[in-house]
Length: 162
Image (cartoon, rainbow, N blue to C red):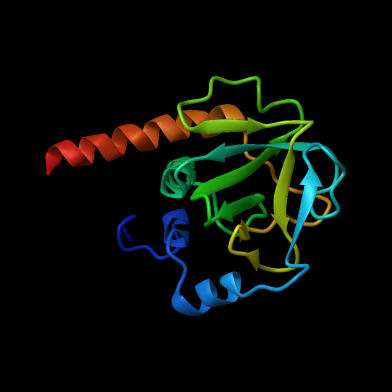
């Protein structure tokens, strides 16, 4: 059985893109991203939505690993490599209904988000997991915030053990 440290199919493996992916994201041209109003019926995910932005990116990926979410089931997750944030889309009306750990921001109606266009996007907005068009599988924000705390506790425990 593979361990999280050597399993390349973990969310944490998206932290450091390989050189060719990084180059492609940095050189992405006009039209690789769009500015979208949070809560809008955006074509890629359909229906209303909100998001939680988790800093740093590594912390957000560790939380998704703690949730044990499959990588290929259409959970809409965006990496902002320029701000080192992970943006996880959640159902409309739920982002502010949960306790948010430090460095987790709710993006709700009235805010705007840079989102990827196409299969990848660009350096400030790249798909980590593309949603299934019209049927996004949103992450539960309560479980996500609990996973952020659990991943942080695990990181601290490992640090103390060293």
